[in-house]
Structure formats: structure tokens, C-alpha cells
Length: 368
Image (cartoon, rainbow, N blue to C red):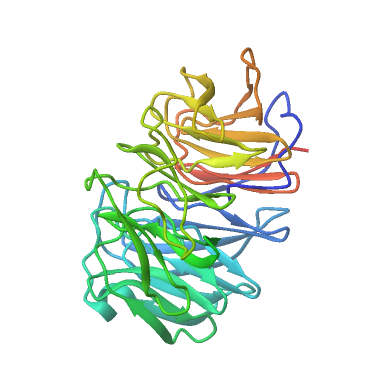
């Protein structure tokens, strides 16, 4: 969740935690929440554990666990955010296991194993893309030359289509209309591209000048244009032709703002992102209009925008609030939530409750 109608007008003077739930492992996957439940991933030795909590009390409602042996940097805990879809939840592991479970009790409805089903190759840092829901499909990367993207029927898990391609990048995919054509947009290891959501047919390709890029930030739709950002190529804004194909030459670009793992957000026509050098606000032409290049903003961070404001949750556990259009002298409201632990996961914000997953626990912070 990068855009929310619940971003507050101000932060509390001190953190007020409504509840805290201990976790067993470092985690990179984001938090999913409704007004009733909160779901996040965890890991215990060689077992993935998805935990569902009561949003009001933090009481454990259910757990869904399965064998997921394997070692990689930052643990092999899931990287993908769980996706709540009515009475179902889609859970995607770092090792390519996709499960559909019941939201009520975590009971398994169906499952697929991408590595086994399509003889894929495990990416160095695992499967990272959050499942993408389009119409009646759930779409995930297959990490196989004959199954770059794979679409399953949401209800029963039957294969609907798969498309060939390179290994995936490490970012999410989006589905939006560009150039009058609805399409899936994202990155493989070698390029950015668009795909037809009904068939999986590739519509266009923009080769990367830096094939070694991890391609973590999620693409961002800005009106009819597409913002792509990465740690070497910087930020690039692309237009589309009348056939819905991205034009390779950027309309605007800024190679000085190069996010590593943070996805940019847009609010009130301004683009916000963080890099290893600091926190930046850009205008529609990718020109820097405000920056803060100091601690704690020169580490990875997660952003949520809305209501004319931007929430910034830093890797070191500081929460900042800024106006969407800052003046030159603007300084953020800053609140320290935790110390001595790291925050890698995208938080969730539902009304006055802000859910943060650290390396050690899941926190429910009151922002009322």
C-alpha cells in the first residue's frame, strides 16, 4: 500500500502502541490489513509461517505454515506482501510456493509450486513480487524461460496462461491503462515491459542499460505516463504511443535520484522517493524541488502518501510526516518508534492504526 486516505494531519508526540506481537525472524514482506485483521509473514528455521492477528487486540487468529527449506541473504522468509481478496488470502513464498487460503481461518483452498511446476530457476534473492490480482486472475512470476509470468484462476488455481521471457526482476507488477490499452507493467532482469492481461502476450520492451540492476521499485502510473526507477539508471518518465506501447526515449529523466529498494509514490502531482543519499521530492518533470540528505533518511525507507501528506518509515524505525508540497525550509515531524532493530517491510495504515513489522515483532501504533 503506497497510497492511503488515512494519512494523519500530525504525528503523536510520543509513540502509543495499542499492541505488540513477537515474531521469530527477520522479514522483508509487507503487512496486509483490513479493519478486522492484520496478516504478515514469518519464518521458523525451515518453515514459512503466515500469521493473522485481530486488528484491535493483536490476538492470534490463525497461522498457516509449510516447509520452505533454503538459505539466502536476509533469510528465505517471504518477500511478497499477502494479498487479501474478499474471503481469500494469497500468500507467495520466496521459494515460489503460492497458496490461496481462507481469510476466516487460514484453511488451504489451493496451492501451486512455481519451481516444481515449471522447472524454474530460483532467483538469487528469491521470488519477490507480490501476487497481482487482475479480473479473475492471480498473476505471479514463474522464474522459468517458458513461464516468466503465470496467471491462475483465483478461485480454483487452474492455469489460465503463461508467457515466456527472462528471469524476473525483484519488483512488483502493476495493471493499468497506458496509451488507451490496459496492460500489466513491470520488469524482468533485462528490461521493462508490458503484457496483455488476458493472454500474457508481450506488448513492448525497453531494454535496460544496466542489466545488473535489481529492479526493486514498483513502476508508478502518473496520469498516462509511466515512472520507472532503479538504483543505477535513476528515474525515467515514459510516454506511450496510440497502440499502448511505451516509447523507449524518456520524456524526462533524473539520474541523480536512484532508489535502491524504495518504491516512489505520487501525491498532489509531486513524486517522493528515498535513495541511499536521502529523501527527495520531485516535480512532474523529475526536477528536485526539495531534499533532505541526512540521518535518518539516507537509508532505505517505505512511503505512504495521501491527504496532501507523506509518511516515511525509515529502516532504523523513525516515522516522519511531511506535506506533499514542502517549502524550502520544511522540516519533517519525526517520531522514533523502535531502536536496535531494522524495518524492511512495507507498513499498513487503516484508519488510525499503523502496522509496522520489525525484525522482532509486529507493532500496532495509534495515529489518532
